[in-house]
Image (cartoon, rainbow, N blue to C red):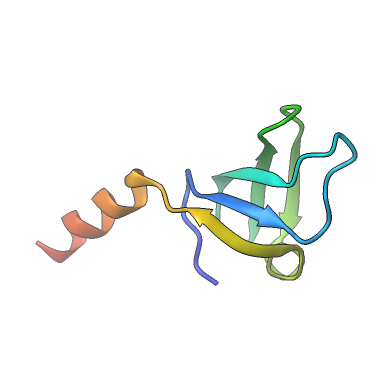
Length: 72
């Protein structure tokens, strides 16, 4: 699963606040995600991130622009 900064992902289990959608704010060996309901920020190792994410709800425009620049 490839996610980029700004993507919105849905987790398998809801957060304690009831929200299940998160914004990806950092990628790499660790992923930093922010709950869109309460604003809580957590960091997960890549392996845990892949296990906990159910699907990518929306891809960001930032990642698409970066890919376009690399192709040119």
